[in-house]
Length: 414
Image (cartoon, rainbow, N blue to C red; front, side):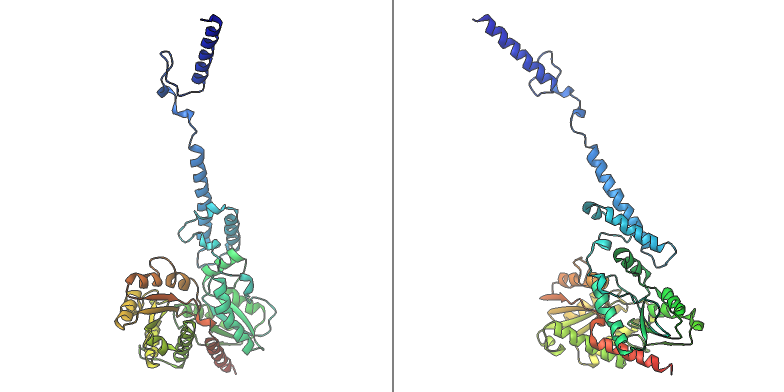
């Protein structure tokens, strides 16, 4: 045997063994080598940095959620403008992954992230230097940009076209919505107090308020309360009727305004659904379900009156419902049973609201299991359930009705 080769081989084996030991190798331990289980777990890559990153992401998202919740309020303060700017700046600083983690009492990724159309197509109508005659169009408001243009701005534009000698201005009664639009899109819309202060500062002498509210409900009452503090600041004031006119005493009390709106929305729904009219839809087993907001206010009888009006016009396949389920017969479950009992197999959902905003897009047509569309589908009694996202304000005949109400108010100033 070659002694030199043997010595070299032994030396090589010893070197390899030493390297394996130094690197924590998995070779079987020798009699003098510590067992592999003795190697501390700390030699593996620690998970701490990853956990820390997740915590940091959630913390950043939670900070934005808190800023959103702070402006999701009905009261405007001296800090509101700065709070709106801070919430948007913090949102913009988040990564896409962090934005998906935003969740608060009212905050979610859709607050800033949902695409509702181009706010640049809107006009807040808050310019100064407007002369002595103003028509202030008062709306609840919506943060859905497309709907604000189609449903609110269309009414304002129609009124301005009808009364060129008057300056049309806007006020929203929902500060929550005003803050949302301002924070997300940088569009400042006046609330009632701001709009009335602006009118006083502009030297307005004759003021007409045209509410776009559906009825004499809670929002209308709040508008009137705000106006009371300014009655001595103008020479003449007139308040026009809301869309459906006077409420009436019971479910049988209907009027020309309710008739006009019923005809307009049913005609538009039929056309959008590909039918000549409501009767043609009924012949093909299709019901129209009109979803209003609902209210605990005494004016809730208005929804029952609209159901009466539909019957008087022969629209037996039209059913009135409400998100709030007030009156009780307008709750979604009750409406589903009524449509089933009448034998209709197809349903078209349509908002009975001036603006097709959050309620129309989410409560009526949303993908969540508690939306009206989902509930109708889950019942299993219908062959098809579709939704039309269109507010009453987008209908020309409804815009004409607002113009008529404004004219009647102006006539009282003479």
